[in-house]
Length: 333
Image (cartoon, rainbow, N blue to C red; front, side, top):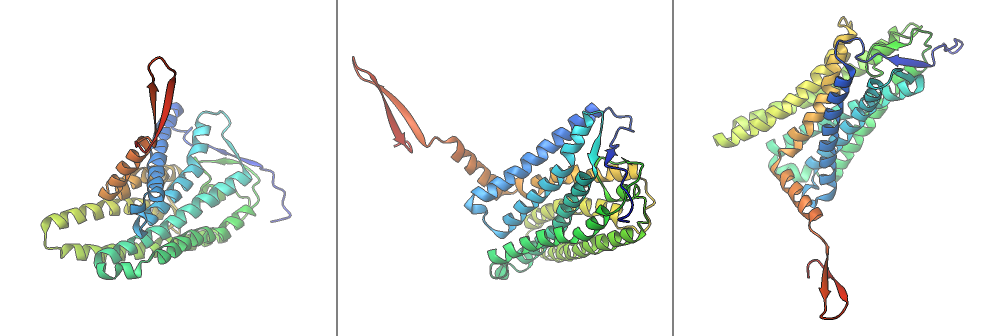
């Protein structure tokens, strides 16, 4: 493999150029959704960092979820927007491999973090008296660090193998980013072993974290059903349903694309499904996990009041038949 010469030095990302939809329309649509998603996640990160009332494990997990979503979305969407407005939709081999690594590393870390968040909610709802003793801030930070570490290390071996593949042409990737399957189809080398490694690692990562998440929500739903007050059950079910919707959407799309030994579906269908976890879930998560929360709303109002209220006021006094003086009043005093 090392003795072969790499003829291809860049790839062409076909994106949506083979569809009937005009690219300026797609640019506007994806730009708006990307901007809204980034603003929503940035608000969550800022609130958790600046407001002491949100310095708790649950909101630390949510803030890191927002960071991961902003990371893997930014890895793909800006390049896609540039390609919408350019004639040559090229990306170098090194940039393509780097995009693949960062995208799948951030996505893998998010799966681990979703499992950790579901376990955190299980402790808070099913064992409320022991929650503070078990889920300390130290354990919270350790779980966050482990999620990041496992995600970025789990994807490293397959990415190194893909980076060593020879690409001799053609160089057209039928996708809007450097996804693994269309990238492997362009390699002039037998990639069966790499496909098996990718399948096994994706199955372990996705199904393992899904098992933890599913068991946690099963116990949570069982506890909610035992709540005597109907209003309390309704509120808890409303929260659980919205969380489960996003989790199902995210896991379902990824399992459909990556955990199938024989991928019979087309790459065009992959592009449509990819939009769900690259565009839709980052757009929904800030609103479902945080911005509907009463405590987050209060923190947002408090931060807005703190930013708009002047710390220093200037009062201009004009003496009779004299010059104008400026008096500085700190904190309105």
